[in-house]
Image (cartoon, rainbow, N blue to C red; front, side, top):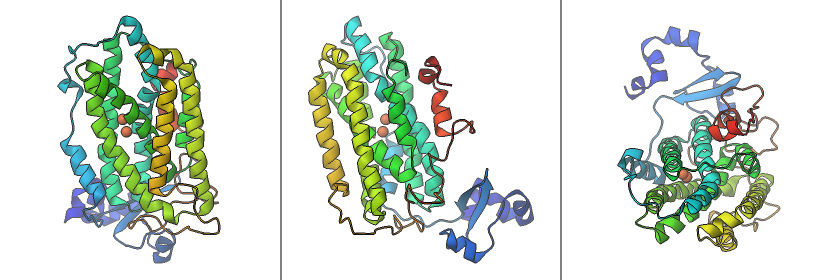
Length: 359
Ligand SMILES: [Fe+2]
Ligand SMILES: [Fe+2]
């Protein structure tokens, strides 16, 4: 029996009584349906007041997300596959400038890794099995990017900026953690477009240098991330309530404004490493607007259209509006003051934040 291979599923297969004593099994058909869980083949338990669901034998059809997952698994590489003796092709002053320029991207890699670990249980709760599979490989990619950039800083012999030196980074990542998985996927798509544009610049202009080669590898991963987010959002957006749609539009503008402010600070560093900051940001804005258009987030929605149907084929309850009275697990609900494992608390334990003494 397939389900018995799963950790949480072992107990019900072998010791149903023991399961009931350890997990709160939702037996009422009505309450399960109310929660959007139609199948009795799911086991629910409460962790710190929140409902978590494991479906023993979920439907797993091959879709784009499964194919992206396979691609991701086959494309794995590690820091040990990089030739760290490749030339840097930067003067010490340029290395210093690159270290500063790279900081928001570097923090973005850590933030994406931590954020995925928060979005994954939400997808489980919504029955989005293939999205969960895909996100597991995404998490591995972002962990690798984080590790590899940490190593790069050592090779450059330069430190990233601190949050104190660039407080906009905290604003940016606070915005990413608000809302639920739909907000997160949209925010991460914007960040991925930024990262892809940044890395592509060096992959093209320095193909033989250490950072150029690293960038070429990372860009391939970021392409998969974009494909996932585009697919997920394209499927979900036509059915979200219109207030929610407006929140996502506003989020794009907010993130772009923060990016503008960040790179105003980095103007001189960008010049030093041969990047025209203004042109870069203009191209980035155009790419993000273009992507928004493709996924149907272009502000042209009929203001009288109610939307609000469930998202994705596997999701019965959909993504709740940020203004809903009882939202599902959400980043917003995770308060740093009361939680030692939440998104912001985890982010605050990273060296960048600790140096800024934000905790
Ligand atoms: Fe990344
Ligand atoms: Fe990414």
